[in-house]
Image (cartoon, rainbow, N blue to C red; front, side):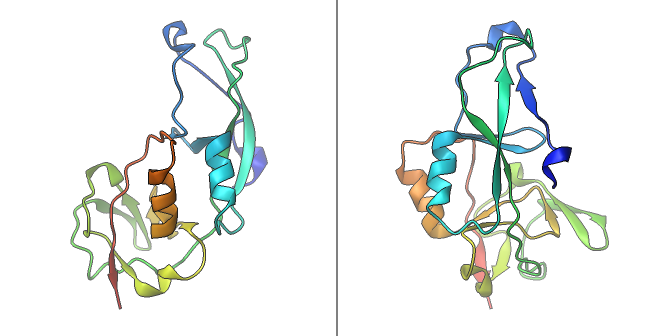
Length: 162
């Protein structure tokens, strides 16, 4: 998505949250990440993924928080990587004939099947058919899990086929 179409700032809805801890990764309309999460990702093949700095304000919309956060615009795509026939999941629903909505919050390990060819290339990617679904290579997942990052992110293992 072009930078012009992404938010320029973010604020808390209620003053009681003004000083809340922010996870290293969280998602609202877009994925947001901390500076240290961005630094970790830069050590991997993330293709043309971009990190756009965004201002974060308290609920009064004038007091800026010191947190340095970014919108993560994931550009790396691996079209055709999802194997619908070998996926055993009720976690998606058709949106159009060529587009699915993926509900990752009810996913489980080995329910989503991806082709073995996805092991090549970018460590962070999307399949354009599956909306809202991020794919991480095993090595990137292990690096995140082994770090002191606290992302609001749950990983589910994919079934590798073909």
